[in-house]
Length: 289
Image (cartoon, rainbow, N blue to C red):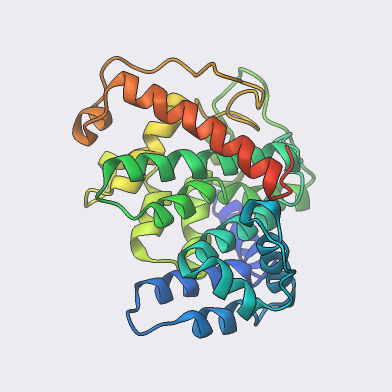
C-alpha cells in the first residue's frame, strides 16, 4: 500500500501542473477578500494565462451577460461584469478545465463529470444563499471542485493500466482505497492545498464524507455531505439532466437541515431552482452535458 501511495503522490504532482487556472482562482479569491484590491488587479491576474483570459472574454460576450458591443480584452470583461461575477466565471472556467477529459478508470465521460461538478456547485451555492452566513461564491467553488480528487486517482490508475470499479461489489470509496490508498476527498484536499486555496475550502473538500470527524465545524463540508444525501454519490451525473420539474426525495428530518433552518419544502424549492440554474448555465454559457 505504501508503494501505491508514493506513486499516487507523484500523480498528484502531475495533476497540479495540468493548468495554472486553479492557482489563479485561489489567488483571485484572496483578492476578493482584500479591501484594497480592484478591477485592475484581478484583470491582471486573469490575463496572466492566455487560455483562461480567452475563456473569460468569451463568457463575457455570451448571451448570459446580454453582450451587444463585443468585448476585446480581459480588462473590459471585468469592467463589464464586475469583480464578483468574474470570480464566478473563473470558477466556471476552472471547473470546465478540470472536467475536460474522460475519467476512464471510473467509467465517467467528461460531459457527465462536468454536469455533476456544475450541479453540485450550483446546489451548494444556493444552500449558502439560503443559509445567509456563508459566502455563496466560496460555496460555489467548493461545490464545483468537490470531486477534483478523481482527476489524480484516474491519472494514477491510467498509468497503472486502468481498472474499472465492479458494479455492486464495493463502494466507490472502498474501490479508491484498495487501488491507491486514498479516497477522492483526501486527494482533492491535497490538490487544493498545493494550489493554495484557503484552509476552510481545503477542509471542506477533505471532510465532505464525514464532517463530524473534522476538528472544527465546517459548514461547507456539512453542505457537501448534505448534497450527497440528496444526490447519492455515484458515477457521473447526480441524476438525469432532463429531470424537469421532478426533484429527488428530501429527508423529512436531517441534522443539517435543522441547523440551517431548512424545511423539506424549502429544500425541494432549492433543488428545483438549482435545476433551473443548471439548464440556464448550459444554455447561455456554452456548457455541455
